Length: 297
Image (cartoon, rainbow, N blue to C red; front, side, top):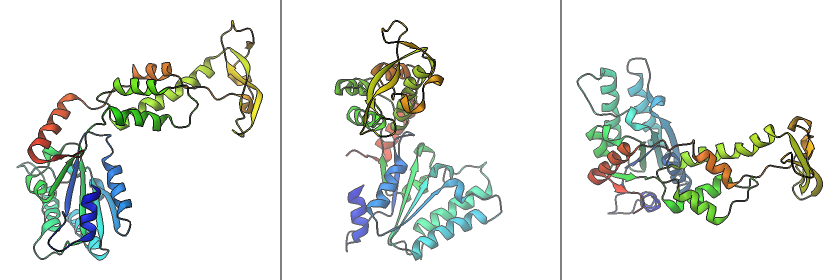
């Protein structure tokens, strides 16, 4: 993607850059983030981010006007990037039972992307979709570069777990992260973020259900650089230092931050399932083989 943007920014003679790039892949793989990264890389360009719903109107002729005005604005502020999320909602295959309004929007979009007499030099159109096979063939042709954004591989999943856990108190080891990556094949980046979010609530639930606490040393909730020795954390009733109390009895500045454990994540893993099914992955793979290229190439 970076090389595509560089070529587009350079606009070198005899090296005409692509003016339409389609990002397709399973939901939750970061297609929108890639578009934003492109905008950041091309920091001297104007970035327009819209969804198909932004270009739809119930008033007759208004949707076509919105599409036309979007491209006109992009031409005024060259170099510019137009990012359209969920473009399949706007440009699905034409059929006999589609409305006249939908047909006109599609026609206007095609004209603006590659119409006779329109100068689109310096304009890059980025589209994103989870279901590229429903795109109209004429629209698909206008996206000269079609890039498949796949599910994260094992190395990416391992790093995603590290990033999502972040600075929360935990006792996870590198081997734990590796095991989690191995056990989450088929999960998208979004799925992993939901999994970790659920797991981070497990220590909170332990605090809420605890009937006994004990005193420990640790960083002060008010200042992490200060170590205090009278923090309270949940413990079993049989612990020699156990004090019978509920979390409501613990002062807010005396509660030790609960630790995220591997068992917490495994417990969440048993209930948080991937959102992408194998049938959709097969169709995306087939579309890549027929019309696109792998984003990892």
